[in-house]
Length: 95
Image 1 (tube, rainbow, N blue to C red):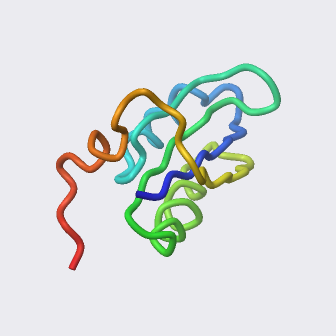
Image 2 (image 1 turned 30 degrees about the horizontal axis):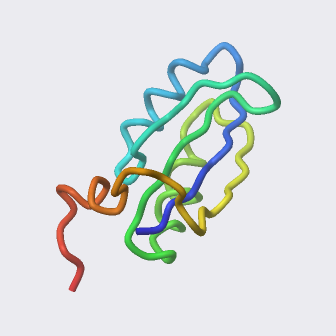
């Protein structure tokens, strides 16, 4: 599982609308409204790095109201939970 953390700047008047549209995208597991330089943080989870191109520049960046994004790839998870198992639930096995 590859996790990308996408910081999103939006048109301020459209934050709620943009957040709902981003949350509805396949591979987006969570969207947080935050304060600071960016308005939203989207968690994108895919099986392979190559799939990030389909999700982030291919769909997420094209949501109306998004002004800018910055993507960070998570390399290691520090958690007391088995996140790999949790986020693989319902995902078809890749061949």
